[in-house]
Length: 203
Image (cartoon, rainbow, N blue to C red):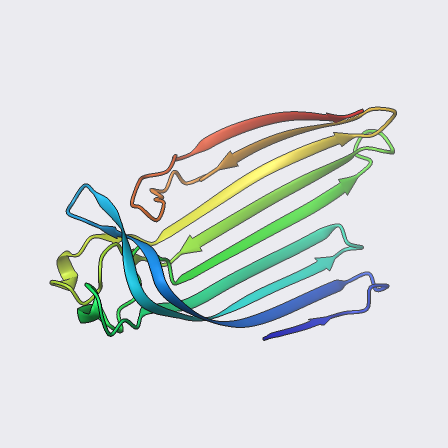
């Protein structure tokens, strides 16, 4: 199920928004379930159901030079097994699956900073992931369960693009600006603050 709305393309200020709802029923779901403190195993969850909603929005201002985009997802992905090894955890969220995350981005284009055909793009982004358990949420004491903590990261960057017979662009970017601790869905820590410099050309 999807609904979308947008403004007139000919206006100087343009906006767009979209919302999706989804329902997924899965049989014999293969899920990564922690087996002890250091090991993970691919296990068969006999039945699972995912219900969720996604939203995306964008607005462009100042003659389309400034744009802001955001998107978010909420999903309730739960075990519905009546048989098998995990029937005791019926109704629990599937482990190692984030249920809420949010992304945002901002971009500003500066035309002809030094030459008529060149432009500078300044961009920033942020990402949030709500905390989630690595194991079945009803097993054991919730206060002492293995959990992926909430993650909130920011990034900044700038691209200078030169136009001509050969197009060149130089991008400088810093990711995870605050050096926050971030993890993948297996609980493995991802890189902290990182700097990137990229040169590209189109012949």
